Length: 126
Image (cartoon, rainbow, N blue to C red; front, side):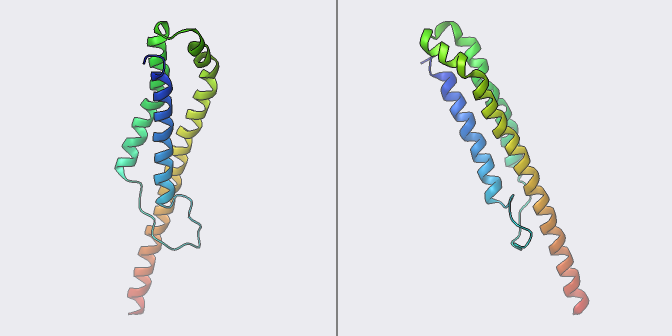
């Protein structure tokens, strides 16, 4: 069990990061300017999930360090070889979360501005 725990935690962190990225994409992070559907602001739950993601991205490496003596030769060698590439992958997805959250917030800001301006224009005509 100790041998697979770091790998399991890494996979869980990756899926968590992908989930956050997917939520931001579904909520309109990459909508085009001519798409006039309303984009919601980034929810606090997503912000909290992103903070949790930071800890989840670090967890596999800390657990590996703690359990290194209990992990046997071949698996330990695989973990040692994949350590830096796996950290780079998680780092890329962690940064992608931040970028997509920023893009969603920017799209939401435009959406709010468009809504206010359309109401103001409608009130001026009436």
